[in-house]
Length: 317
Ligand code: GLU
Image 1 (cartoon, rainbow, N blue to C red):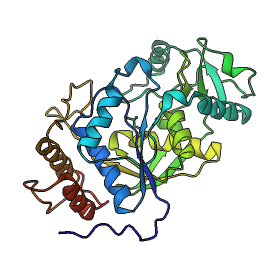
Image 2: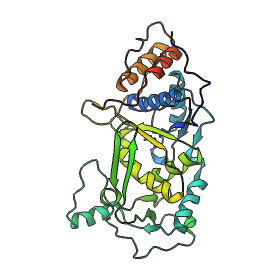
Image 3: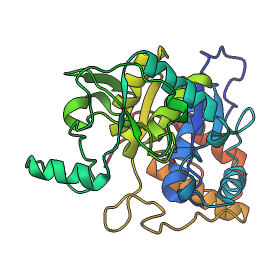
Image 4: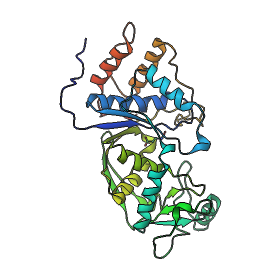
């Protein structure tokens, strides 16, 4: 029997989180993220928060947030503190956008996707499949000013962040090591609030991670290419930059990331044995070794063994 992780050892103030979008129940990929972030928090005697990222309402499925909570609890992945929903934090995001407006770093953009595609095509720029288009700067004014009444300007323009030239953002990923992204070349001025008034993931995640005092972000490697943008926003808004750890993705038989779009199936957690099997598969994906095989042990015991076995130096295959 393993000793419990020492609850009295001094915590470094670690605060982690799991931030699913309620676009469906958890699948094998999202459970890996939940488990990895939970284990990292627990091994470091930290807090683990649950935040439902439900800003993109057309993609949200009613009831999915309830199902996600049920699945997490069935797997013994309990969160600390009250869970939060992004949809009730609009004022926070508006304030951050206003702050960036005061800093003269945002501008309105009326380009449609098609218009951006056409401009890039005319410039001979080819965007590889699965990659975002680098905004060609069509609407960017010569000199950015502070705009009046941006809160009320809905449905006429998106708001983009104006990047300074030559912006290479470097950071150390706790699993993947040194990372670097040149934002102008790889992303371009990116959207903070869409034309339909919805605040984008980039802005909301940065504001919430700061407001919730998150110190460690453990999430899937599909979000790695978003991290430099988020660090730049943190710097502009005067927020601390948390530690980042990106986890290996679960791919389907075609090598695609599991998602609602690829019709990934829901994890099975109805019985204790199903939940343990699901956890074991997620643990194996995270490279956890020598864990009890799940017969005759409780979920709490398995999770304790997994917390001892957790190692940030994961092998990416
Ligand atoms: N809501 C995002 C997703 O489900 C994750 C956000 C994050 O962990 O930064 O993909």
